[in-house]
Length: 279
Image 1 (tube, rainbow, N blue to C red):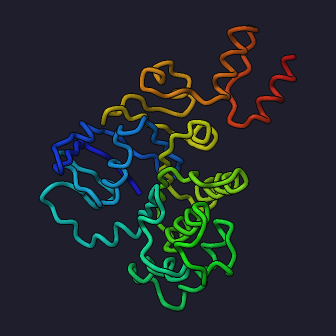
Image 2 (spheres, one colour):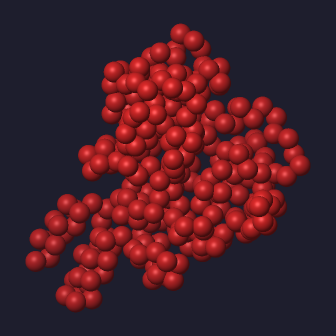
Image 3 (spheres, helix red, strand yellow):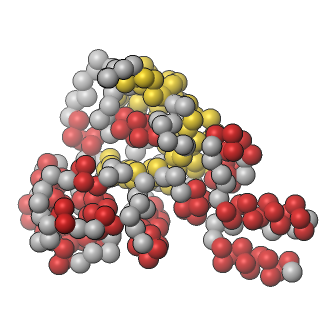
C-alpha cells in the first residue's frame, strides 16, 4: 500500500495542548522494512497511530492508496483500511480483549469478516509463524509471560493477513533466541509475503541489521531520512540523542586507527570475514 504523509501535524488537546508532530512529509517504502527511531517523546507512536486512523491529523493529510485521512473528513469503509494495516502495540496487553489466546486471535478475524471455515487454520498458522504451537490456543492470555504475550499480539495481527505490519518496540520482553526468530519472521514477511514493515524501536542495532530505510524523529519533526547506511553513519545522530549501531562504530574505529576501510556490513559474521581478508 502507498502511504504518504502530506504536511501532517498533530496536537494533543488533553489535558494540555501539546504539539506532537510538525509538518511531516514522508513516504513509507512499499515492500520494505521502514525503521522509525528517536528518543522518548519524539512522536514515534503518534505517527503510527495516524497511519491506522486511530488519530486524525490536526493539519495536513495522509494518503493510503485510495483512502485519505484528514480532519473533518469521514473515512468511508474504514475497516477496509484497517484490515490491511496491522498494528502491534508496545504493550501487548493494551490490545487484548479476550481471556483465551484462541479467542484473542479470532477476535480480529471476526471483526474483519474472515470466512468462518478459515478461522481455525489461520489461528494455528499465525501461532506457528511466531514460534508457538497449538497448545497455546487454550491458554489464558493474561497469564502468559511478557515475551509470549508479544508473540500472541503479533500472531493476532498476522492472522488477518494485512498488507502493512507495524511493530512498536517488538523485541521488549524477548530472550535472545526469540529475538532471533522475530528477526527471521520480519525478513520472511518482507521477502516471501511482500509485506511493508514499519518498525519502531530504540534498538539501533536491530534496525541496522534488518531495515532498508530509516526515519529519525526529534521533537516531532523528521530530522534525518535515508537508507540505513546514510542515516547510521551520519554524525548528527549524536545531536538527536542517538548512538550509531555498534557495528558501525567499530567500522569507523578500524578506519580511523588502522586506516583500513572494510565497508559497512549488516551481520557481524560478514564483518569478521572482511577483517580476515584485510589482516
